[in-house]
Every structure is written in structure tokens, then in C-alpha cells.
Amino acid sequence: MRNLKKLGLFAITAITAFSMVFPSSVSADAIVGESYVTLGANLTEAQRNQILQEMSVSDQSKVIEVTNEEEHQYLGQYMSKATIGTKAISSAKITIQDNGKGIAVKTKNISTITEEMYANAAITAGIKDADLYITAPFKVSGTAGLTGIIKAFETATGKKIDESQKQVANEEIVRTSEVAEEIGDPLKAAQFMNRVKEEVAKEEPKSVEEYRDIIINVSNEFNINLDSDTINQLVTFSQNFNDLNIDWDQLSSQFESLRGDLSEALKSPEAQGIIDSILEWFGELFSAIGDFFTSSSSRSESN
Image (cartoon, rainbow, N blue to C red; front, side):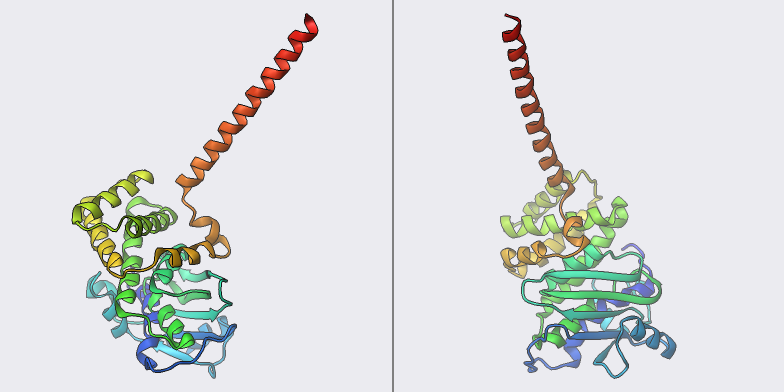
């Protein structure tokens, strides 16, 4: 497991912790425009006030803490205790939007996990139609941010997200960051992971070899080379994702509704390249047709 910055791991934990604080019997309907906040339990008082001010919420707002224990619960399967660390710092805010509005993500002081990675994993977790904001008082990797977002979403909607879905979403954050580190391109890593999920949902592989073929084929599609360890980890992630039996059409609707820069960023550059090639071909075709008629006209006039 590659070393990710310890302090950043708490951002993911923030989202998931909401479900532990509020019982699953809560049935409050999500109110459009309402915001819910999670704070790292190890923030100093000054840092806590700074984050609340940054999020434009008061200390009287509904604030829930995310602990280091929660971080270990959701990330412990995918990275070492030493990497996770002993302090919860990152914080998150979720604001509920209208149905069909889609996901928007903004971050501050998050150095490793990109907005596209958060969007992918949040959608996998079942989060929809919300503005997500992940922050910290200083630079952190941000791998703990997803837990806070999940907790906040559960509190806002009164609906508990399945534990398996939370685990897979957390695993997705870790695996995507590893791919990003290996290929040196975080955006391409997020696009790659989204494509893998799409192919797994469509092909419904049954054997390890079939999962491996999908990952290798998609990596070839994106023109990236992954080492065998990374491929093995992605096979395990893909199996876990497939076990969720998620309706890909429903997930796709959230991807299609991504707002802001996310909408363009998560479009595969390979797909865009194909479109550009087709447009270029049509341009050349029309140009050739135009040249033909111009040439014909010139010959007619000279005859």
C-alpha cells in the first residue's frame, strides 16, 4: 500500500460517521437548501471555529464529529494503521439540492483526492443531488473526506446507506488515488475508474479472469500501464462493486447531472477523441466535395 498523507485520511471518514450518530429509524425528509456539517474530532477549538466560519455556519448549526476510530473502521481494510494515523482533521459539508440537480464538489486544502474522485465515490455510495464541500485547516491528502459526506447525507435524508456500499465507496477513493499516483494523472484515474465500473455493470463478469480482462481492456483504452499488484487490487474492488448489484442506469443519471467543471472533466478523453476524429473526417469529406464541385465548375467554364 502506498503511503498517503496521514492527516488527509479523515475527510472520507466524516461522511460515513453520520449514520452512527443518528439511528436508522430517523425518517426526516431531506430539505432542499439545508446544510449538514461534519468536523474532524481532533481539530483544535481555533481550527474548529475557522472551519465553521469558512463553511458559513455557526456553532449552533447541526454539527457532527468524525473520529479517528471511524476512519480506521472504513479505511482499515485498504491501508495500514500507520498510514491512517491517529487524528481526525478533515471536515465536510453537504447541502441538499432539488431532485435531478446532480452532484457538485468543491475542496480546499485537499492535495491528493480530487473533486472528480469524490464525485465518483459519492455516487457509488448512493449520494445524489447535493453540493459537497471538503476542507481542512491545512494541506491534507483528503482520503478521509468521503466518510463525512456519507454521514452528512444520511443525516439529511434520514436514510441509512448500506454498510457494504460505504465500504466500496471508501475502497474506490483509495484505489483511485493509487492509480493516480501510478500514472501521474488524477483526472485520468477518475475517468478510468468510472469506465471500469461501467463495464463491470454492463458485462456482469463471473470469474477473476473476466474481471481482469475488463480492467486490462479499459487500461488499454486509456493507454495506461498498471502493475500487477494494482490490477489485482482493482479486481477485488470490481468484485466488491459488482456484489452491490447497483443499477448502473441510476448511477449514470447522477453522472449525467454532474455540475460545474465535473461535467466536462469526467468525460473520457478517449471518447472525446473519437468524436473529434469523426468531426474531422466529416470536415475533410465536405472539403473534398467542395473541391470537386469547384473543379467541375472550372472545367465547365473553360470548355
